[in-house]
Image 1 (cartoon, rainbow, N blue to C red):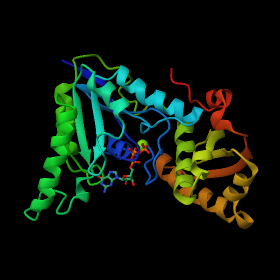
Image 2: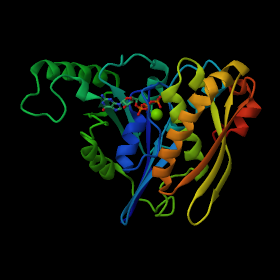
Image 3: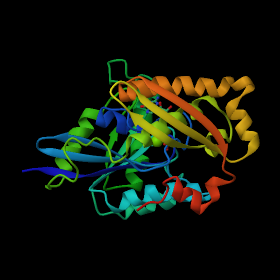
Length: 306
Ligand SMILES: Nc1nc2c(ncn2[C@@H]2O[C@H](COP(=O)(O)OP(=O)(O)OP(=O)(O)O)[C@@H](O)[C@H]2O)c(=O)[nH]1
Ligand SMILES: [Mg+2]
């Protein structure tokens, strides 16, 4: 008997969905940073064994859209409610369960196994790992969080985890395997993701922008890969950082190009780890006025859910 299915990871921004997917798959597929709205696409991470294929989907944090890019992001999250065999709804120990009732109501109506993951339990004093030092106060706090979520999603199984410390992740994987339906594989057994190499290049560059720039800058940036040429020894990459206005272009480049140089150096190091090859990376900065509100530009950048 072969099992296969779609296990979709949804939840509000910044709760640790991408961190969790990377731990479940055992590869750094999805970028994860301390900033909300890090993930903009639906990204598959596939776990293959001879008897099984689990197709995880990481999705953008659910939000109320203010511009067209965010509408596409929400559409990716909502698409993950349509085709899931098992849904992982991720929250954390500080989130107000009623923060986003519209989306939660959609989850409540689903007729499929939902596992509610209360992430970041390491942030409760005394965790992780349930050692003998686990304090009473943190146990009480966790119990009250579980109770509140149970009232909202009575049919969901609830599992406290720490994605960052991989605490609870193996138990979760085991439970997913049990819930997975009988089915042939959906993808080739050597396939790790649905996205091409260029996608990971642009994500790794965007990750550096999320890390090194403040305020609106990371949210105004899109990265496109113009050239990706691999030979025996190297990979040659040309990428473009698009911003919405001229003033943002100046900020990205920085005084005497220092800021862009840092992005480029750090991105190159991460890319060399990711592809396990020396990389030649050239990055240019261009203005694409108001791209995140333009249907045409969003299509061009691949933000159209199928
Ligand atoms: N303390 C703690 N922090 C965590 C844990 N899991 C993730 N984080 C941190 O939470 C932040 C957000 O993590 P992400 O994985 O990017 O969260 P996300 O839900 O994918 O966020 P979006 O893509 O923006 O919706 C990062 O700083 C992570 O390091 C955890 O178990 N414990
Ligand atoms: Mg994410």
